[in-house]
Length: 422
Image (tube, rainbow, N blue to C red; front, side, top):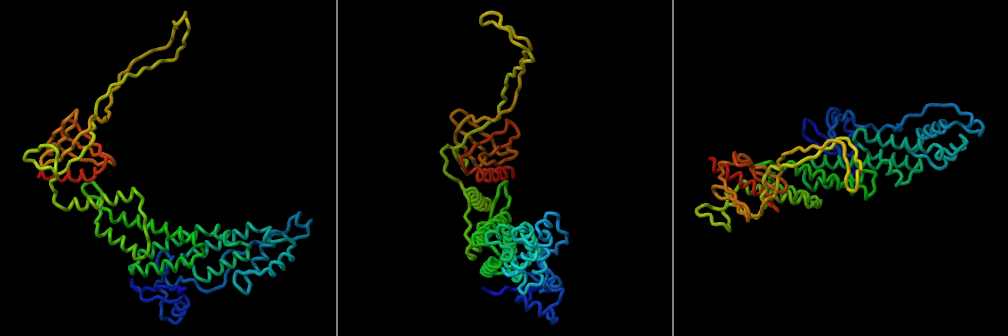
């Protein structure tokens, strides 16, 4: 496994990368200044060397307060619950190997206080382990000795790998995800990025499954972030430079990361790439089934026509009342009966037919209804997930429902409208 390297920067430029102990030695000798900056994969940003963690021995959780034994402890002839925690803390603070107690240590401590400390105080020992995780990650710098100490604490407190990961898993997964994103942001080659990400994955105390899961989440977040930055709004739709997108995907490929797009994202990207070219290339005439005379056809498709219609409904309201049977089918009802007419606008699909954008106008030819209006009457074009709405200065707005391709149709229509209006 490659040695952990600490990257050093001065006056905004990186000047080298060294092992942790070498950095400490160079700071002590004056070769590196305390106002220089350091960074390693996993840290969210650069920090001054003046705050680089020193190699000092200190437990990552405070010594518990002293407390007398209660009546029940006295009856059983044992020391208090707190005495057990104090005995463990003091032994850990003086242990030859940092944060590590042997089974012999536990046997002596259990005999001293009169009970099995790990069994009785397990909740507090687990709390100490959780506090150690928080302290070790508080500066976004997880040093190798901290990883060793955490493993020693888990062993001392009787936590197996699964139990320890259940406590610290999400904290280190978050640390790892942020670390990957900071590596992605660095101005280094894709190969160097992958090397630093792999090294970071070996440094965190996570299982291979958890490392892979966190890595996939970080890569997806990076992809979403970059895709958002590459997408542009143009002519009312999303466009993306195919060359820039291809370069981004090649970067991921060089790092041996495979991003599998879901159907929705793939459709979005494909549409954005087509619209990019459509917004930048001359409009081309296409074949049309309708006889347009001298007018050229620039787009045509089978669609459904939707129109806003006024619909009147009758509403009946009855007040409080009763019903009394008089004879046979005849009943007498008390209460009021009123009728109120309500009129509302309702969008209805009224026909299916051929929609055509010519050099001068919009034409719809259906089996029941035909429309024909010049581009000068068009005020706005709105794109929906399955339709486009054309706002006109008179005659009512129209909606065309598409099986696909509505974004491309809207771009072409807007360009034709602009050309017609000069």
